[in-house]
Length: 118
Image: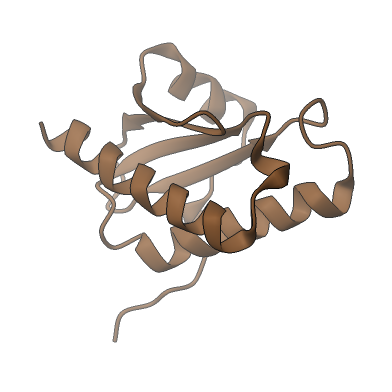
C-alpha cells in the first residue's frame, strides 16, 4: 500500500540542504508562494518550508500555513519528481483560506513537475 506519511526522510533538515536548493533552482511561483527546487539523488522528493515572520506575524498563522502546505506535499508526494524543494511564503498568503492555499500549492506542484520534466 502507498504510504502518505511525512517522515524525516522527506524533509530538508540542515542549512546546507536548504542552501544547495538556492544555488540554481527550477522555479514555480505565484504572488504568494514560491517553490524552488533542484534534482536530488534520493528516490523521493524532499521539502523544506520557510514562512517569514515578516510576512506572517503570528505564530498560529505561520503554523496553519505550514500545516496546509505539509499536508498537500504529503498527499501529492508520489506525483512530484525526485526534487529537493524549498517553499517560500510571501505577502498576501495570510488573507487566504486553507482551501485556497491548498488549491494554489497543488497548482504549483504540477507546474514544478512540468518544468522539471520539460
